[in-house]
Length: 312
Length: 311
Image (cartoon, rainbow over all chains, first blue to last red; front, side):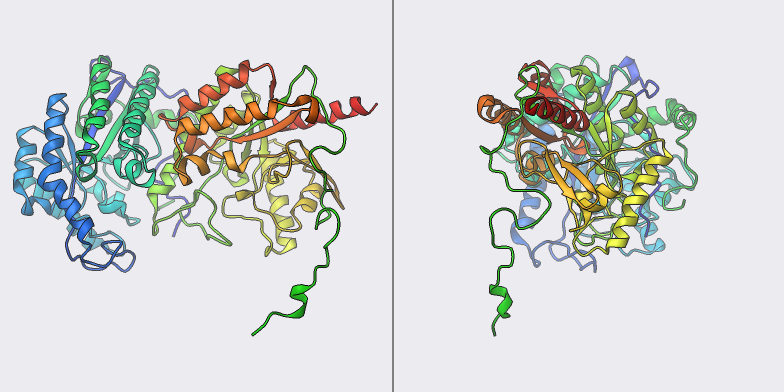
């Protein structure tokens, strides 16, 4: 076990070379609805139970089912109103359970990326063949359902192994949402491929804000507005990324959705310098236009360290 | 079943403290010290620079901010690292904009990795303090004295290797052993940020010389209030402003007070929180009652003021 994962080099925020998003925009903004399936009776991973309470966790399970039956649809219609497309963090097993949701997202030209098969199956303890099987299953399932190749990864329930990043890079994923060290993308040090970290944010993720930080709906809206204002201001120096990671079983609740809408409205009304887009489009722009510039800047500052992730 | 008889003996039951580090002094007793320029309050801004490893021992307890989920907990590793990469530069910009100086305790073992940050702190004229070896080197009552002595010496030499000679110390997790004060004094440290028993700097006497304790408020700690206690940025801001007003209120009775405020990069350096810090710094930089400086200058100002008031 390693104390420093060496997945990326230390790269201080100040005086970085300029990033400009398409059309001279300062902030790349994306919304990440998590469309998840939690199993009724998941097998136990030795390191973590599928549910915090003994299965069946009826309230936890049915609240998430409410998200699939009602919540996603309410959120989709809200995002339609502001012309925002989603980049979906998908439990790919949901494709088999609820194809209507997938079809509705395809019809909106939303992007899909992998969030594992089920959010109740963790990566802890997987051997390489098992982890490859999950990744290949994710790619294949979305390809069959939508005709599109996924390019992004967010490990199920944020559970990883030391080889996760090398594997997804090898399978030609472009971005990982698993790392929260920055408000700008950065190349990840993998043995092969061209993988970048995509700013996703736990700090303004609705699971954290409503749950861990116990925010009221209005406070969460205020936090999102301030997050946006600050990152847009800093984007004048060099383009920043803001993501709102969402879970419909939380944000689409009838007592929360209107306060949340006020945040989307604020962003929409102040979007003249904002690229409202998807994660894959941000990744594509960064890897084609700014990958080399970033590597050179880190090198020029003398901050490049040898080795790759978990492999110093 | 019963307890041993000595459980009901009280060997230090007497007037004053039950330890010999510093004397008892109630707030109204003794001579109060007034800082020059009618400054009723000295404010020390403390920005802890800590590196949280992916595989901490967690002994004797987990440092605040340490990993939470099973290895590899990249979620918490990277959210803490955000502070050292991004958040701290927002704090530096805000300090610079307000024209204020702070003190940055740094884990000695992080000096190498964070070298550009160390230079940015230095070139902005802030004080650098020693913050132990790492978040996984907690000084505590069960730590062997010789080991603790080595840790302090290693900390000092890692700073020296970078051309730095800090004389202010903060312990990881602000935890100490019974020997920490004397070992710090022996190691050349003059000021410690672990103790908060007063509203003025307090001088400890140790067998190796004095050690000044500048109070740092745990009850206003941004991580504690905003994360552990889930308070809002507005509430944090309001409490700090209330503390400033209270501490400035009775200079004729108590002289100049001191308040230490912690600004944790991965907490207050978040984009949605930084406006609250800017509001506090704006208030501090325009309030004529307040003297904001690094801890060494604050302790020096108290020393000079107390000399002139006794002569």
